Image (cartoon, one colour):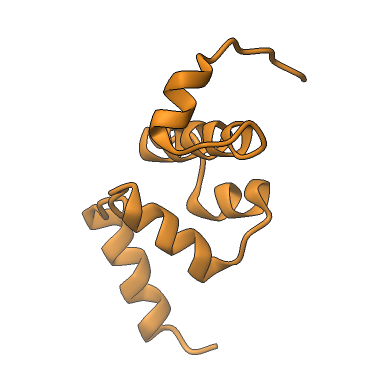
Length: 86
C-alpha cells in the first residue's frame, strides 16, 4: 500500500529530516507506536524495518517503549520451563 502525505518542508527541515529520510522515520514511528500499544511484537517491528535485535532495542530505548509487563501466568510458564527436563 502506498500512502501520500503532505508534510511541510520547513517543518521537516526544522526537525532535521531530508525528503529521503522522512518516510522511513514516519514508518518507524508508526511501527514503534503500534508495538507500544501491544499490536506488534518487538521482533515483528525489527523484521519490518529490516534491522537486527540490538539496533531494534536501541530504537525502542530511544522511543521509551517499555518491555511488556509479565503477569503471574507468564511467571508460572517460565518456572515450568526451568523445572521441566528437556
